[in-house]
Image 1 (tube, rainbow, N blue to C red):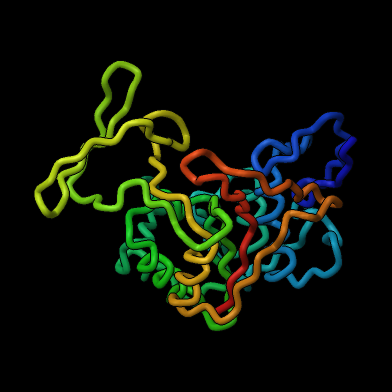
Image 2 (tube, helix red, strand yellow):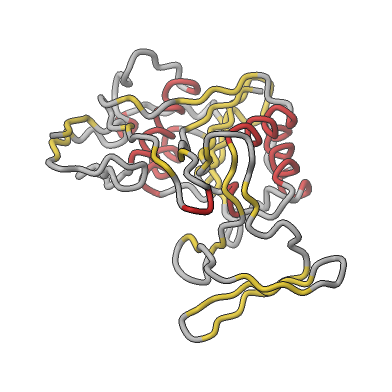
Length: 264
């Protein structure tokens, strides 16, 4: 039996045989997963100053704080609609208005002096180098601002780049199969199959699985002076799951993928 009160909608969940997984541990009220509740808990703790193991009220009941400015990067509407009501907040997108290409400094420069930025499961899909995107995020925050980030990452240091020499490439389909065909800068052509898409086949292609050490090093290199992992151990709000060995590609390394909060 799993019981928790959702910190987004306030629904009291009493679940039998629930799968405690970051994407599958679902609130019956708002359909939030554990990852969403962790992201919102980070905002409640660090941006709104909540303390203890749970917020004083769910996000849906929070008063307006329009003096606080923030953006999301393709945030789920499960919580983005509440953030829009509470804060001076915009949910940005790579391919729809309001547009933000976080890898492009001229695009990110449209957003500045922010109190918080949320990037939940986005960094694994952007083009390398990730360090450039993190620097743009850092520059968009005001001093003392917070970057709330999630990304699938593994224990240990090494990041697994699926396409380490990505340059001039296309994604092609043959029947039900998709392939990435890349022409490297040295002129060599290479083809990759077994692609991992987010949001359905042919949608957003996973570029990498981060290593914990590498990800933290990039965050420090971007300039963040405080970087804190929030372990998924808060059963009161249903932000919980267990670390587990990842796929064969990761050679049995544990998948962690916690919410991380970085302060400028």
